Length: 93
Image (cartoon, rainbow, N blue to C red):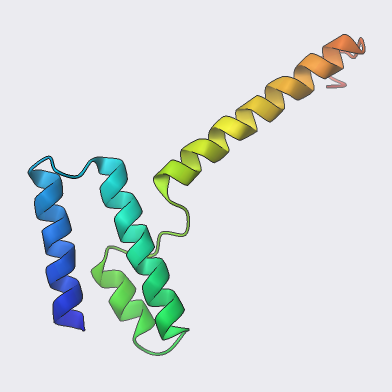
């Protein structure tokens, strides 16, 4: 399994270097593989070693992070606007 995972990682890197995978796609694919490894190994002694082959644990994909950041900014903007509508000061908001 280690050899196959190393080969897969090397192929992902090669495709990225050749422009066939974007930065986001590479990060997302590594994250998905790590999630699968974590699920399959379920904390056994091989989990850390196998996840490290793919470049460490990635809990949240880049595209998920970008969506979360956008949602957080949208929620903050909405809170400020609502506070202003109710006549709250900046400190109160």
